[in-house]
Image (cartoon, rainbow over all chains, first blue to last red; front, side, top):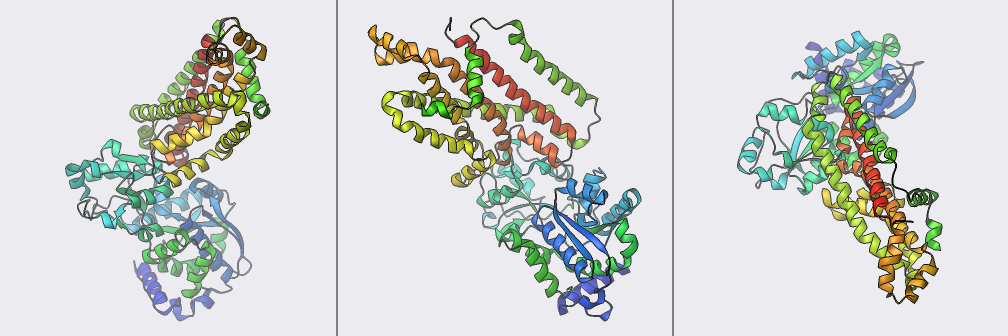
Length: 315
Length: 264
């Protein structure tokens, strides 16, 4: 608990002064050169947020003097995870919720961010010799969103519970676009409907490609509500309103840098010192803004990562 | 002759395969495919039944989901194929007339563009151009994608009719329309059915992409299986789609034989 507060304070200070203030040193120089001689391969999954996170890792490790091999954009979740467990890559950012549901095949998520992280970290260390560093502040979970300008016609819903009224009174307006994964997962639509005690009319749920869900919801064609990711830059860019998960159903998806034992057993302390302040500084607001620059403004993930790292004094 | 040049060897092979047999189908030809599909279907069913399905697998592999997705898939395939027939056969007939010859390379060129573009790209372009999602734009995409084989085979089928037969029919006093209806088209039927088979198989395959554009279909099962890392789901999706493709191909082949003129 103390540790977490410390990190949070460091993060806040880092943001305020544009320095990583931990230990009172200048953030950049504090960890500079600590990984001299280390050779680390960095991977990432294949979507925008992951490309940014991968580049953040790469820059942080290079800044500390490590010899970094760039395997960013390794593939989908399964491919990237397999690359890590086989030692093909040494690190990538994984979400605690994904590990819990997909890797450990659990069906009941844990509501507390730190608890969820600790269970996953402990289990992955025990079973797979993988080391989870402190999780980032931001949470990239599922949510339902609708275009803000349509609020009135949809009865001004604010929470997922509010949708019960809409479904009861105006079922034709209760249209929802989802991607196939969300329609089948326990931590997706089926579980959400069960928790909230309502069901979207069956013919009103349209399965679409992930990328198209955003524009479909924005245009209200063919659906008023879309399944979105909370840290996705398009949520704010398209002016979508996210419904609050008032019953706390959706699992937490805070990412942590995950390292193989080969690297962590040798450089564990140094890696903690490098990444903990970075994770603390990656708040919901910061990550969403970074994602927006890549997904909406089409900037390169490596440029966005570099700007952010130097602005925050990490390099 | 331009049309014949564009016919691929696969079409020619399909042509001779369908056109050659003059006898009635043997029992093996009648029953081989249905029995094969039944065996594969039953084997898959038994394998899935023996598996301990988790909640995600049970959800996607429920009877309701599979029946609904299969019906959607059949609807997409049938509607698009019927539209293709309505467009491509009249167009093929018109293009086979002597006076339309200069237009042949142009029309085939356009039809070739439809098939040359990768299918998911074509659907995406139509989605952008249309600005909406669902059944209609996907059907338009399927139509654009499968027009070529039927158009080309109609054209080739009509062009390969022996000109002396047409001359003889005209000499007997038949009108040009009568010659088309009673001589040319019946003789072109086997080749045209080969085109229909190709179009059906293309449509069954391409319709798996409909799930990305809100039109459902069995692609949902396949891509859920990949996305959720569940092999059971993936295998069921693949078996259903390939079974459907083999089934429609078989049905069209049999129909082509029954409709072909006797003694050919």
